[in-house]
Length: 148
Image (cartoon, rainbow, N blue to C red; front, side, top):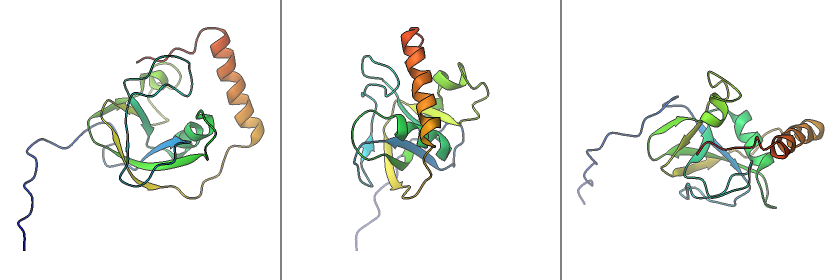
């Protein structure tokens, strides 16, 4: 019989909605145990790699994330847990949805995949197209800035 490994003395990560179920929408094909890390470009604006990884405590926000994600892969929603502290996403909470009703967050630490949502309802095609058109308008007006 082996001894249990010693626990880290550092406090667990903290942030808004601690204890909630968190989601990340993407087209990346990943597995339970994989890490989603900062360093990728945004799905919503062209530019340099972001220094944050984004996630939400609402399935609705994750559905938008996977539906708008760049790439050709299947839309996926992963259940994730932050490995470091997390904060309100100022791109939404300060800009579009004060008070953070979307429960959208970001972290500089990776997110560990702990599961996948196998069944969810996509937005109707006309609603998805309206969102894509809105994002295209923001881009055309130079208002597609990501606060990194």
